Length: 261
Image 1 (tube, rainbow, N blue to C red):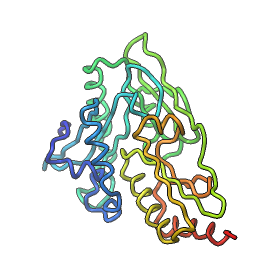
Image 2 (image 1 turned 60 degrees about the vertical axis):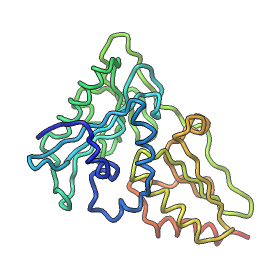
Image 3 (image 1 turned 90 degrees about the vertical axis):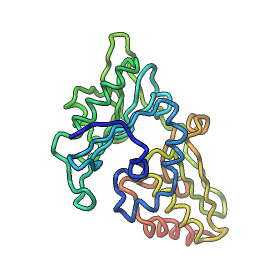
């Protein structure tokens, strides 16, 4: 198993979170590619895990915390660590210690960049990006927002613990219309899929539905709302992890349309 930096020849695979076999990933648009083009010269780090056939079976990406969804100084933030876990494509490579090798390589790189520590996020339930997994690797919980747990591993004694940037407001209803508001940062293909499905579903209802896109890669927008990636229908947040189907989103919008007078 090799851990290497992202090479251009693997870019397309990276943009699809290693799931080039997935029809669902093809719905994500080019938002991840756009995000990468903006972040590649802003301190983005990407490590890949290659098997003996030099196939990519895992990845980790991390950014300076000022481009993340948490407050901090002289820290790096892990957006995600992912080891391919499906039988399709290259197959299931989870439970083989690859995630551990990826996070160790990332930490070594982050130390070399002069950061005072590394920050990660995880969920309190036992599925993708488990907070408990980071705790096993020496990370400590410092903040929580709903199910999202913020953790960190300081490298120096003068490092200051990070904290979540809290949601400041939510979209309001529009009289006589159904309001569909999609917040999009671009870093996560799964959330990009939600955005594209919501946009397509909203267009099915003509002028009865107002679709609003809020670009949260723009820090002014993110600071105003305190929301990175989310979907709201008439001011009510829709659960987006895992991504709801196109039909599910369309049905939710349709229920609100039927209530219009």
